[in-house]
Amino acid sequence: MAIYPTAQYEGTAPADGEYVIAVCTPDVVGPYILASGKLEAFTATEWIMIPITMIGVRLWQEQPLWLILGPYFVILIAGIVLNLWWPGRQRMNIAAWSGFVAGLLYLGSGAATLLQTGIALQAATAGSAVLLTLIIAAIQIGAGAVAVTISLRSTVPTSTRFRIQMVVIGIVGLVAWAGLIVGPLLAFVAALIPAKKG
Image (tube, rainbow, N blue to C red; front, side, top):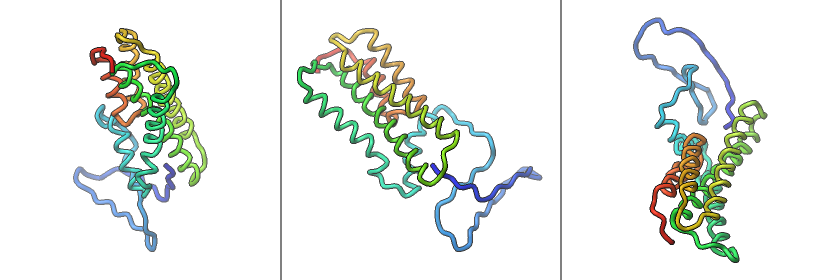
């Protein structure tokens, strides 16, 4: 997101206790961010929940929900429709469908990340943070493309190789914030459920 630093203060608190920080901008109304401290540290749960947390941040930025979730729904619906209508497509088992939908959600994350980067760049100049964001988007898109590809090529019964690939894709999704947590869970489901025709 685009952030405009307007004030900065650094000092050592003279004693332990509770402190109150007042933020006042006369005649200006709007959301603000107050960052305290310099060290960013996340628990495993906080890290995994970042995609969900960011939905709240985007809503706080007054973005409409359709804009935030739109890339996911567009890619998910288009991918399923194309798969069902593709001439000569192979019948997929339940595990393959689970991996396929996980891949579509990963692709949606990549598209959403690129969309949000574009929105931020309308208000701020590009910096090194943009490169990191583009790398994350590339990982999301790459993992999604792999998940879709191996799911479309999977055969019944589900192979051990497919299951291992899905576990790796699930882990990558959790680390790279792909698939709104549902995607990685579906990848793990694809790796674990018994092979059945679906």
